[in-house]
Length: 149
Image 1: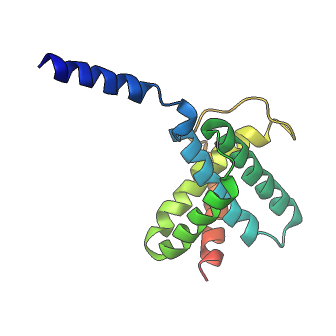
Image 2 (image 1 turned 45 degrees about the vertical axis):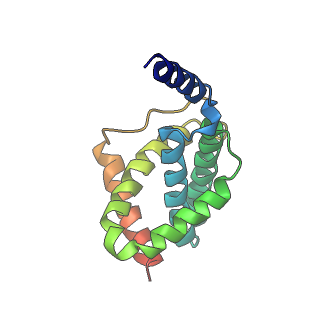
Image 3 (image 1 turned 180 degrees about the vertical axis):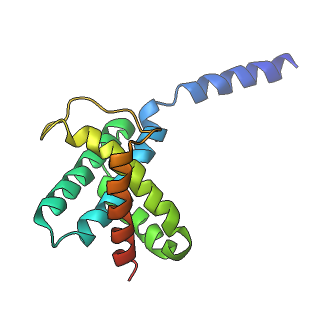
């Protein structure tokens, strides 16, 4: 019994010694997901230079947040994999992706309002204002509707 407790203590010590950068945090996952959502927005709104620039900047910002939180440098590859997953499951998941677009849009507005160089990470939104919701519901419906065709 004593040997088992010793082994368990050693295992716990080994597990807690794993650097945090080796684990992808929830925030990193949310940022990567939002980066992919905004990649769809940028692609489907390429005909509007101002929106394409805004959405492209959000892709970059969320990629930066992902890299900062995860310590990884593979944001572009991971985003591409997520986009493949979105496309494969779009028919059954489109309503969820549209709502994700609203949440990601609200979060992006907190970054974009800081100008070209963001200096703090806004809190991932749990409550979304009516104006932002209405705006991003339209953007997400349009984007995922066009992207799916």
